[in-house]
Image 1 (tube, helix red, strand yellow):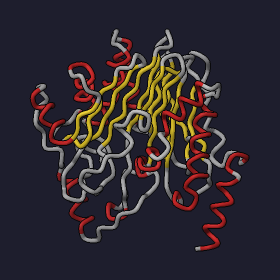
Image 2 (cartoon, rainbow, N blue to C red):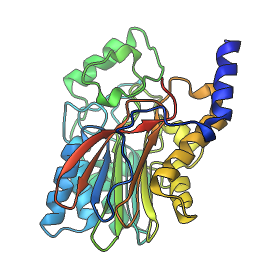
Image 3 (cartoon, one colour):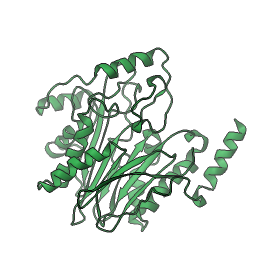
Length: 335
């Protein structure tokens, strides 16, 4: 244990000078004016397609990121977002989401229940209330009053995974479960999200982030996803950033706000993502062993950045012609 801790401490101390440990093909940077939509994980490709189609049909950026986020929310086979998401340790599926534009518009919900499209409820909070976030029972009551139908989110496969988990109640992180169709629920601490950020030809920005959070989390737990400055941050003329991975590590450093602040200070999107990941490693040392955290960023010109702690984080980028590529982000550590 002492040797391992010493090793990680040394790794964190030299993080600022380390070469990329991840795959060289994680080519963040983008062509100027090229990238329009950026989202986390392989399943972000389908979300990007929906967002791009909405933009092509004349929708606003908010329309687009909402449409994109709704795709995984409605997918019962995606156990990390929306309908079919894994429940908390008491068997309740609770959803967190935020939506934001670059004019200061913000809406969020946390611990929302019995509603498929948390992102749409978050948008309704932004557009029809004086608040930026509603939580728990209040969020669910708001959704019903706003016309969102009741839907039991706990699907039979998710319920089975939960009941299997109860046999051991193991509760530890498992990096990159987002991209694994099959994994052992008893060993999974799902920290899954879709974050989607977009720009238009004029350089305006918007974003959305939605999740069912950690599988088998403590009831009432809220991660980074719905929190402005943690799961998502947008600033006009500067950039947009979203995060994924273990939310507690993102909230400790207000991760996406830090990314955008670095961009405001002159860093490229790629440099800004690297800076916050290196900061987390330096700050947390051995505590982040085996933990995944990743960031995506885009600026008004379409330059992008992506970086993570461990190999395995992927992102989907869609250009102004609707062409999408899924890429492995570079990582700070090898494993």
